[in-house]
Length: 274
Length: 299
Image 1: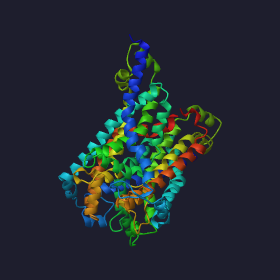
Image 2: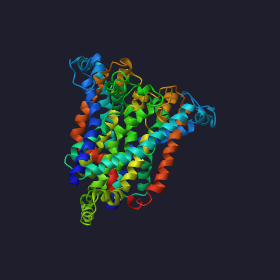
Image 3: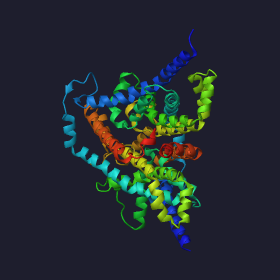
Image 4: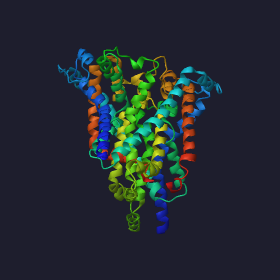
């Protein structure tokens, strides 16, 4: 009997908490369908008079799509290079013995502790002096640089757990390191490739501060910048803003449900392995 | 004729060079050097054009620590850290303990609680800006239900920071819960079985076995939480933008408004250096005390 009682309270707490998480998301999505007057009087219930204009006007807005496209370019570009460079580096750290191996690995590890904010002004100047301002590289390259550290740790951990026998056999057959990397390591590493990709993609997709510093040209705005401009324009026209919020929220949630396994693995992997 | 051994050696060096150069170059140019440059620029008054010439010594730092808004932002960062460490993490641990057992629906709750973490911070903050809006949001609805005039929490000097803290809690407790659950799943079943056989109830098991075995995981989440709190920016912008009257800045939003927007490279870099030093201080302290015992088997 006592156990049942306890379980009852447990579920009460958990459902309450789930409500606290879900209700803000729900009122946002539903709020996009409401008239301003209704938002005032009826924020929790379903709309009495469904209004689709907020969503439709965004879906036919070319800027909305442009910003999404820009963010896609930043995210895909960053992810491609982070995965390539970090896996190559981690491969060397995991398989090749040389004097500076551990020193260089620690060099990358140290970078993890460098707060991005400290570097933003010099970083901006560097990007400017390299003539990258006004191009997508202004966002992509710094994101690659700051994404390398953590990705190298994840890759290295994975590569080190791969059975040594494959490696030794391949080397005996006259396989060079580089061939081995492309022919064996990468194909056998899909889980970690997926994990690093998913983490880098989401990190870049949601990044606000870096594009904010680097991008002046409105045609290169990322969607978080776009949504903030939109907020500035329609300050308390919440129906419009919530529609924008929801249109970016829904794909994120779908993405999350589809790839939850990899996201969680990446975020908690380093935590428990050691 | 080259020996096979020499070939292997050469192949090894080529690999090292070809594989390491891209990452090393980008990392050095865009992470390590800018940090050093920030330290250097922080001794100048400079707008970023031409070479930095106007050396001002520690003036930027002096100004910083006499500046009310900066001191306030520093305090805010410490409030955020305190709430994260002493409220958010214990709460996340409690929830993790609750749903890590063979509870029906555990996967469902886990997913729901983790959901806010994957939203962009900007989006999270906009959602909450709506909820807090005294004319439209949920807060307005709740107050209205009781027949009261809703407050505008985000415009209220005394409540704006609390409102921000609630959003931080809402967004980030899920990731810590997830980290704890991963840690709990790594605890061997035999130990837990043995405890059960010995008659330990769920609370005894939690305090005597699970939490002690979770210490390395807890340390990691403390570390992540510290570094994350110090770099808070995105959440503040849509909610208050540092207002009202600059009372809710974090150090990074202060850096953005007073360094980046005005292109004061020297002054902004000084703010950056302070953030860096605090991170470094924490990291060193972390290495020294928290990680001492599990350092040996780390590499």
